[in-house]
Image: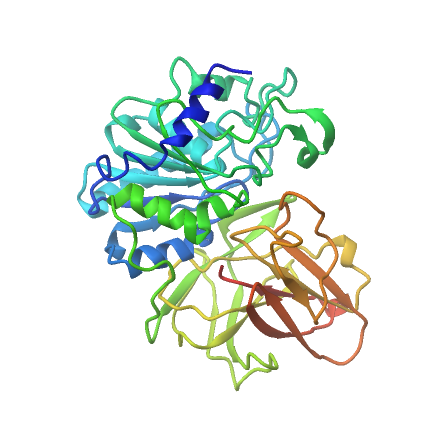
Length: 442
């Protein structure tokens, strides 16, 4: 393989040793950078955890890349997909805004998956050596999802020009401290075969240690999947310790009585999700009974978005389950049931998408979604209406949502559970353009 493999194995043995001595200042701004197809909303639990451990909320923010999906070829334009240059430009602007707003001259960047590419590109090619004190890369496929002599201009190709440029002549940059977080073997994008790329018997020439970097502090978090490397409690502990040099006092968000919520409505176009504001979208919030899913009275909040796509602020109750109802021309009416919000958040992003064609004939559809982690048999317990729905293969965790279809008929209550958390949703007729999600915070 490559010369870095043996060095990474040695570095993993000393992963935690230099943390306290080399920590960044705890009063630096932190900008969280999401991954491929994602949004700022995925960072909500990490934002809450930092706040709950005394980190100044004014120093915490998360970027929304306008077009979060990567192109098939980095040098060929695709509608609603971004190049590495697009991501670099957007991140540079976001960093400039954070430094101007906070009055600091350096900051910490924390990236999930593809977000780490933007961070490394900014540091190497966008002036980030002068502004970044610490770069934390969680599950970033730093040596590619594959390293093959075809699809060379795909940014995820470890043998392509983009990653070759970041990994040579050195894999890290002087003046910036780098920390990587990787799984031992459960990251679906750090696998020796192309199973999750549609080529199960083709070697990728990338192994489980693909996210590690020479010159970085490389931390292994056993058993975590690709998304959990950024959002799991153990990931937070590693991130917090890298930033402050100390272990966090608490790993779960400390609730406040009346959290204030807000965010943006976005949509999908040409088959790609976007983080672009959606105008004239109607957002309604209902308090619901967690045992029945039934609404408890009239809407607690209602707003039609303007050109900025923003909704809120809405003062919630930290013990209440809510149903978000989002409607916009050209999209199904989307019902998103959420477990309670323990703290305030201004990035509750509501993204609309067409109905999955595979579910078009169902009377109604309920989808369990776990945005900050994947689902695995044996490791996770996930049920819709008391049974485990199909769609999760054995082995490495690889999907973040599962659906169950119901016959047409009167509305009914459907219990949904995930790893000890539970909520109850109501069915709505798919034929009338409704879809239902049960979204869990973890």
